[in-house]
Image (cartoon, rainbow, N blue to C red):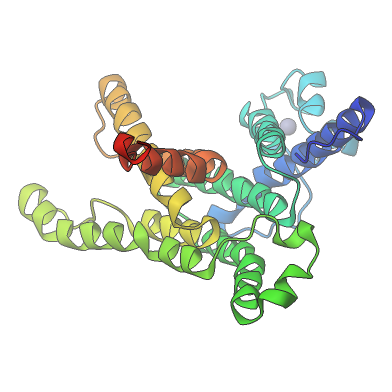
Length: 295
Ligand SMILES: [Zn+2]
């Protein structure tokens, strides 16, 4: 959020209310995506309906979170429970938007990052459910990367034209090199580890699968293209740490050693996008700190 002494408290309250509204409404749409994309159902054709009796959900019951709470999580016509996941996804998306606008300045890039985080929520839940990633959601990330890629090219061709563009567009611009290195810095190692692991796993378990799935690889590549290499490296670090910790816990609980990597990479990408560049700069400054340079 752009902090400015001229902006009054009512402005901030209004602003965050509007952000919450969009967060909840888009969160409601994410539920549709998470539920219908894996089944190849249309996202727009059929209106929301009860999964048990098929009854149409009334517009007043379809209000994000509130509708579910007022119905006490039960269908109005058949009384069967409606999954808690609906209000959870809606509030999660809303909280993610609020955090994003609280941490980052208000710019086009911040709005695009919000859409990126919504895509990550879909990727995480779909991967958790089906152990697969949807290519359409992954390609949506490339679409989100296009505006800043175009701006980076403009900056490279003519610095002057770039400087005359509104700050709303250019404030969070990353150099073209950062986007392109971001595409391969984690994507390529993930791809190679995946390729090399196939014969090893086949020898050991008699099954052909990759240690790192192609979906996870594409997610880190496309995500890297959008957020640049510094944020991507930190994202991968967070993602792998989270997966290691949660993987061990899940193994303890249900004894399953194969699990979806996507949800952890998605969480890593969220943290990396918001704090990665800063964290890596701090780290580089710490590693290269030379106390004698001051003397
Ligand atoms: Zn029903």
